[in-house]
Amino acid sequence: MSWIFRLAVFYFLASSATNAQTSNDPSPKPELTPQQVVEYQLSVLQHNDQPTPDAGIEKAFRFASPANQKSTGPISHFITMVHSAGYAPLLNAKEAAVTRVQVEDDQAKVLARVVSTGGSEMFYLFLLSKQSQGENTNCWMTDGVIGLQPADADQPKVEI
Image (cartoon, rainbow, N blue to C red; front, side, top):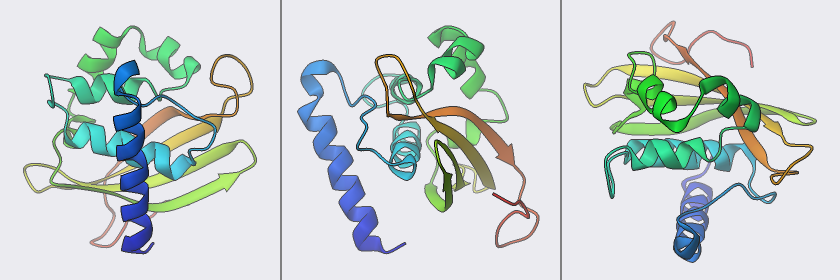
């Protein structure tokens, strides 16, 4: 993916954040692609403690699907879960980028590469679905995130 497109996505999300400050940050919108949703979640987790501790986790939780929110429990449980060893590399990461996207109908898989604050490389598979009902109808939201250990120096051996 070109750096120009990534820059455009960043500005789109940043302008969405600026425009939505009166409503306390962006929320799911039908015009956001699965890649944009994951890039937003990666970005807020990468800056987790800005402006307040765990603000990034709370922002990412807004893009969790209703089924995901129901299974992970209230935000306090979600925060604890993200701080666990499996997801902690996402927090305040040195680098975070989408490396691959697969969309089929109303399901999407997005592979992201993360370099933790300690320099460890991890891959995460984000599973998303387009919501068919409720207040976020036609919005892409995250159903789950799976941490993957790299199989080699390039990318993990996983089919998406």
